[in-house]
Each structure stands twice: as C-alpha cells, then as structure tokens.
Length: 288
View 1 (cartoon, rainbow, N blue to C red):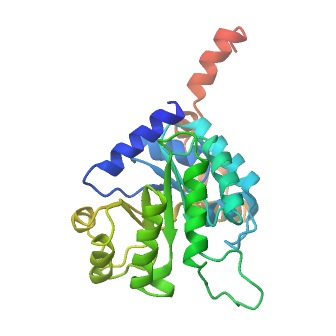
View 2: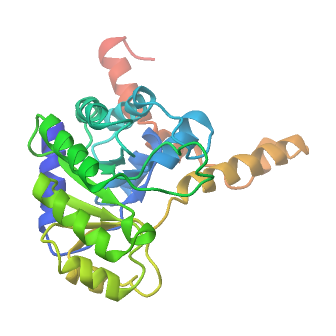
View 3: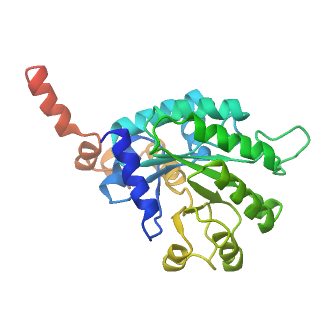
C-alpha cells in the first residue's frame, strides 16, 4: 500500500466516531503480526525505539537518522498504518522541520511532536519541564509547514496536564490547533473531569498516552473525541522476557525440542513471508 493510501486510511479513522487502541510495535515482524491480528494501526514509541535500536532507556540518546532507518524497515515490511512518537523533533523548530521531512519519507501516517524540554537540562535531575508556549507554537508551525503530503497527520503533544495543570494544557491545545496541527496528544488526563474539560476546549481528534481506570472505557473515550488511546508498550518487555527464558533454559541444558514459548516453524514462515520468497526464487532464480 502506498504511503498516501495509508495516510488516507488513518485519517478515516480519525474522522470516525470510535476510539482505537494501536498495537505497540518495534520491528518489521511485530508490525506484520499486528496487521495480521486486525489492529487498525501500529504505534512506535520513542522509548521503544530506543530499546530496540540502542538497548538504552528513554533518555533522548537515539538519533533521528537511527529512528528513521528503523521506521523505514518496518514500513517496507507491512502496510499497517504506523504512528510514531517523534519526541521533541530532535531539537528546535528547524530540527522539527528536518524531522518531519525525514519521517514523512519513511511512510509514517502520523507523528507526534511534544513541547517538553528535551533532553533533560543540566541539574533537572529527572524533573520534566515544558517549553514556553511561544516556542511550542513555533515547533508546531514548523512541523505543519514541513510536510509535503497533506494527508500526513501532525499531532501536537503536551504533558502540561501532568506538569503545570489542565488550564495550561487547554491553552496549549488551543494555540497548537491555531498553528495547524491535526490532532492533540495528552499526557496526564487521568480523570473524567480533566478529559471533559480538554475535550470541550478544542475540536481536534484527541490521543491519550495513558489510561487510568476512571477513564478506561472505550464508549466514554469515543464520545469525548478520543480517537487513539495507548494501552502501554508491553510488546518489547514481553520479547525480552521470552528471550531471557529461552537463553536461560538453553544455558541450563534444556534441549531445543523442549524449549517453551518458541514460535513454530509455521508461524516463522508466515511472518517472514517464506512463501513469497520461495515464489520469487522460482520466478527469478530458477527455483530452490
């Protein structure tokens, strides 16, 4: 599926009246699995990308080039619409332009740009801080202006509700809407009162990064114009645990045939598209 077709499909989801929970994915195989299972979209978090590429925590040490290379490999392998977390755009507003240019060419359907001060400043000791509203607006304008395909979705992201309060989150959402973003992503809307206030202050589709028990009802979320709600990123930790269990069992002498939790040959052939490669070998290389 061509990039534009994927983006049009995702925009149809945003224009609908239902909330989706995207699959947390991190490589070509997981994106293919999510597509096969019927997910409407995949989500590549910045933290997950850092784990997958660097084996490092989410401290903004991953580069834009590394991030783009991972996304391109994923999007070549499957046609499921992929949303990505572009963090702070890897710098100031000029860097945001470059980020949008690079990631648009990898085939993403949407990317989030946040207004958090990243990476952490000297002396902050892990305390999150926000950019000024004016700088945040400049980043959002740069992101919108940089795209070439109007179907690419630019999502403004703010953690203001968790840092400075709901009133600031609303002010930023309104300003970013005026700057031209297509949707807003919020962190820290953990009560219905907070979500109701934000939903009433903007007409944009909403993304949520976390779901507290109080708001984790799909009908309620849909009625508040939440169109994408993340449910965590358990896929990568699950893979780490599976790898650990397998390696540990082998180290302790478990025969290959008695290992638990290993994908069958049939599953591996399915998700590596073995049949396609066999057909191509027959067509181009004279069989095998």
